[in-house]
Length: 215
Image (cartoon, rainbow, N blue to C red):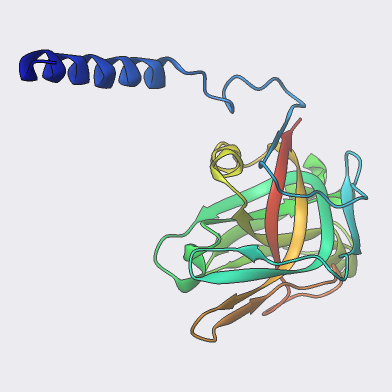
């Protein structure tokens, strides 16, 4: 084949591929309400929560870890949460951002009600989520602790990452995946909380996210 013809053929292939890519539907934008976007090859926990609350289950003893860029994520428990998004914060510069590019502060039970949230001042930064109130708390403090959490989210693939990127405050979502401990090749570790009863440093969930549903 003459060089000029080959060059034009290559240009045609590149242009056609670009046109196909630009015209390909966005799986997140085209997903109807209630649709679940799931990572390919990422196993879901056997038990999953309904439309409100959290559900934690044992991880299979022979379950392998999930490979990350320079680390692995060891599954500690199956995990599912259906909740209202109180706030989100994206991260780019801390060590954790290599794995979890965003945190979501989530609430379930009575804490997701407008009447309760209107009495709370909510903020999120530095991988923490905070709430304050004036006067009497809108719920007993121990219920506030049990009914909300800041979660560090590790997307299993680009589809899940795009779904997470599309989430905003006040959305209703369900996230299914695994609570994990991240072990980096240089010895650095990051371990998830395994209870909703704690607060403060170390109380956040580190979630390897296999599926996202927006209601």
